[in-house]
Length: 585
Image 1: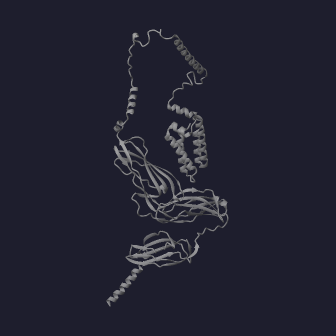
Image 2: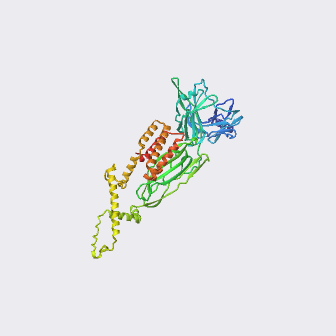
Image 3: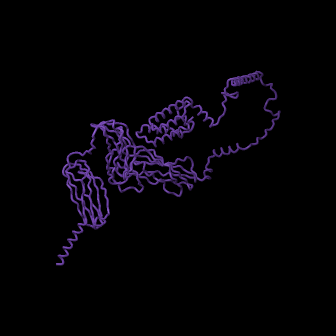
């Protein structure tokens, strides 16, 4: 009798524990779905007896479904009766790929080593592709906007491009759309890289115009939501605010086998390091080292590799320059240049090396490491540098010291007439030779007299001027005379370019820049019979010529770039100022 009572008590206890765990499936159940239609499904497990709730989601056949990564959440709260509850939920978005009757399997929840099972769901999928409904257009003048992404299945920190487009049956109504904005999105970092291009596309029943372009970089794995973009429509004296659709992203986590030196670079990259300080290196004197990272991806947010700590040198915070531009859905393309100042603290041979740098390639779906070369430095003390000077340098220094001193000239001994090298008499010299010498001297005296007389009467610069004997000038006076001979007014051109930048007239800016170059080429060709590049190299050196050439190349690239940001144009103007100010009048 006692055994029967204990058995019944055990069954009742098991039923009570079972009642303390509930596993539910929440979904928008419809009579039918279409191929490609998103079906959000939430699996929920609620426990009263344990804080540790684990769940295994049902298997979704990849031949039948496209499945997003689950977004999970655990909550701890009290119900109406004050009972402590633990709720675990998992959100999965599936898209049917085949028509017919399909089944959503059961989820398994594990609580205190006991498995609990949810109910399975049956759905029916029509043999029809799902097309997202657009808002109804009530009249020809009505405008609506939509947001589309280039790829909604991306990795963390992988770029995707969002385009906000306006639609209307009336082509002229598209010009009334303004102030397109995308609100902040949780877990998504984005940059606006393009505005309206003014081009109208003609569809079957309506017109469309691109209004804004964004590059998006998700920061967290899971399901991310791009909130609806907003815009203003100014029509008939009234302003109406409209909103676009929201877009969901399936953000995949990066693989777990990341290298130790991986930080956040996603895309394709290469890095180089080089010493920019010429000549010998001296202890406690700064050395310029340049680290250049090139590639495409989340380039604006990549963490640059750092120099390893060493007792042989000190490293100071670098100055980083960004030269990037949008590259479609791949992200930003260009280069990051970091200029480091390194001060050697010890003399001798020792290497400087960067810490490792690796990135994730989303196309090949694997991590890659960049091979960074180690740069050897040979640092000397001031005494060593002085002793290593060449023989020629020492001779030149000694010569300069001698020339700076007063030298006593030795007295030349008088030559006795009896021991003179001249003949005692001129009896052996022919008379005709003496007359020929006198005639030769008289001719040259007359020639110089005529030159002196002509300069004295016709010279505009005074009696001491002679076209055959130009006055000696130093380098500064020569450069001043060359600049005075130039007739092109470069400062005026640069001021005009700055005005066009402020007005954001970029087309006029590039035309004005081309005109300035034509005037400069023409002027230098007339006065110096050479090209601008040859003139700069001959006057200022090859380094300035290369800088000038780089500026011209960057102007050409920016001219044909579809994206012209205000900051990039201002940086370009500063480079033009720096290159052209050296040859200004």
